[in-house]
Amino acid sequence: MDLARLWPALLLPLAAALDFRYHHQEGMEAFLKSVARNYSSITHLHSVGKSVRGRNLWVLVVGQFPKEHRVGIPEFKYVANMHGDETVGRELLLHLIDYLVSRYGKDVEVTQLVNSTRIHIMPSMNPDGFEAVRKPDCYYSNGRENHNQYDLNRNFPDAFEYNNATRQPETRAVMAWLRAEPFVLSANLHGGALVASYPFDNGAPATGTSHSRSLTPDDDVFQHLAHTYASRNPNMTKPDQCKNKMNFPNGVTNGYSWYPLQGPANSKPQSACLHAGRFQRRLPRLALGTRRLSSGMQDYNYVWAQCFEITLELSCCKYPREEKLPYFWNDNKASLIEYIKQVHLGIKGQVFDQNKNPLPNVIVEVQDRKHICPFRTNKFGEYYLLLLPGSYEINVTVPGHEPHLTKVVIPEKSQHFSALKKNFVLPFQGQLESLLGSNPPCPMIPLYKMSSSHSAATKPSLFLFLLILLHIFFK
Ligand code: ZN
Image 1 (cartoon, rainbow, N blue to C red):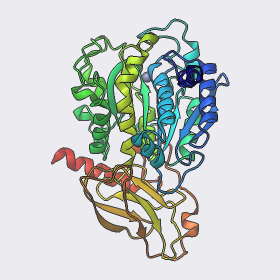
Image 2: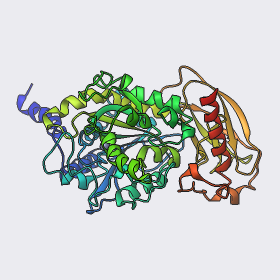
Image 3: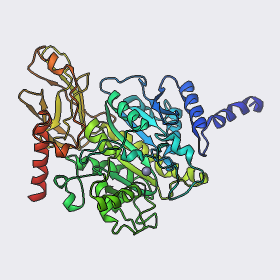
Image 4: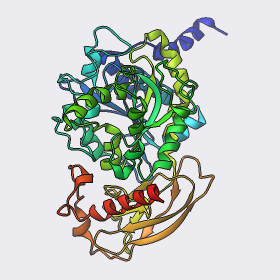
């Protein structure tokens, strides 16, 4: 073989490969733009907004139809680096992008995943914070907050307490993004601990806070999601990996449980990302009795955006040396892929009227797991319910009308890369247009403190939700 002709071919993939070093905004943009250019048929690069300093909040979408939502294809997202000094997730997501696009069409698993899922990847939600870090540090640096010194993971509306923090541009951009896409599953990537943490982060007695936890009606699914990630990461499940006496059985924790498990406030809380923030907030709250505790992104995703999100703490050291990055990639690669696949749990489908018109804003939920803000069909009449195998009674309700109950069995061995498909046809004929035309927003006040004068649409479900929890805790 002619060696002179072979050399360029050998060098090409090497030159194109992503290196294991930290990519600042400019380098990250260059990489994302080169991916969007080289893989234009399966990627779509866009900015969902700008940081305080005007840096773009880039999202690269990977999918068979990357530019827009298609009926039946669930939307998935990863968000990293919302704490600017927690840097591992940022680089992992760049490598995940590289992995997905370079293996598409060659690797069966990646090809099926990309064909069946629209995957949104935001490597940095806080680019100003990342650029503000002067001296990388394992525990704390000035880059945690955004440029206005706000902790973005305490900057979202909260279902349990009033959050009067000024909504930051980065937070507003993510909230608008959540309204624009019907996300089903998500994870946000942090550092400072090794654990997969699931909602709620905040709570009320009705969600179990008197038992040092705060659980959602979908707790079985959230535990499964957290275990799916943690069990494939060789270090996450080992006890006290970060040598700070924080032991999380099997590498998972309920977000609310995390704090009370830590004991007194002076017992080394500095290393954990969420905990450090919570620690800083907790002291004045205890002293003054009025300061907020949480207002994190994962609770917001679940309560207001119908999107299941967990928080992944991926490194003991928040900003490790870049020589360690290949090890982090190796430890997290399988988990990152397997976690995306979970978007195909449960059932999905559309709700139609008698004339086969899709019906938006119809409530579709499992009968005994009502959400604080009811889960509704999107503008295509679609719903997605993440559920483990089992038997469920699905409640399909047009607000103001009788509920339609249907029993559905999700088999143990669900099809790969697709939830069970189940459409519902309701006995209406075109008379619902005005009722279903606008999407009634879920109130932005602490939902657990709603008085009887508030939205009739959410009252029954809140009541039922509390009733279910009371039943669980006192039976
Ligand atoms: Zn963090």
